[in-house]
Image 1 (cartoon, rainbow, N blue to C red):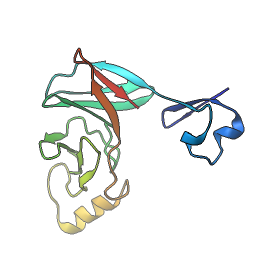
Image 2 (cartoon, rainbow, N blue to C red):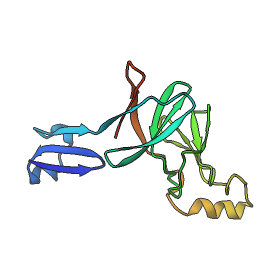
Image 3 (cartoon, helix red, strand yellow):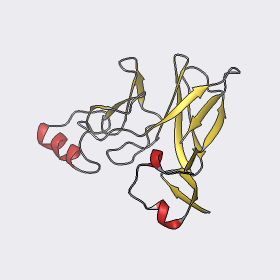
Image 4 (tube, rainbow, N blue to C red):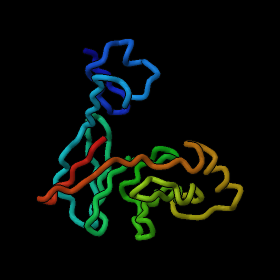
Length: 157
C-alpha cells in the first residue's frame, strides 16, 4: 500500500504502477479517496477565521448565517484576504490591497486587480498592477464547508 498526498487527497490501496495509470479514478478498482476534514467549531455571523486543515490554510467566513471556506490568499499576489470587505453581491470578498473581488461560493473572479491600497490609480498603472502575479481573473480556491446540527462548521480540503 502506498499513501500519496496530492492536493490534500489521500490515495490508498494502490500499487505504484496503478497510482500513475492514465485511467480515470472512478474506473480504478480498489481506489479509496479520503479528503481531510476539520471541525472548525462555531464562527459567529459576520466573523471569519483562518485555520489549518491538514497543512492547508483555510479562511472560514460566516456571512449572514452561511459558512464559506476559501484560501486566505488572494490569487493575484498571494496577499492575505482575511480583512477584505465582504459584500452581498454574490456574496463576494474584495482583497484590500489591489481590489480583486471573488465570489465566496465558487471563487469566481468578479473583478481583477485595479487598485492600490483602495485607491484607483491612472489606467496605465492599474494595467501594470493587474499584469503581475497570478494569471488575470484567476479564481480563489474554495473548499467544501457544511454546518452540522450543533452549528459547528466542517471544512473539507
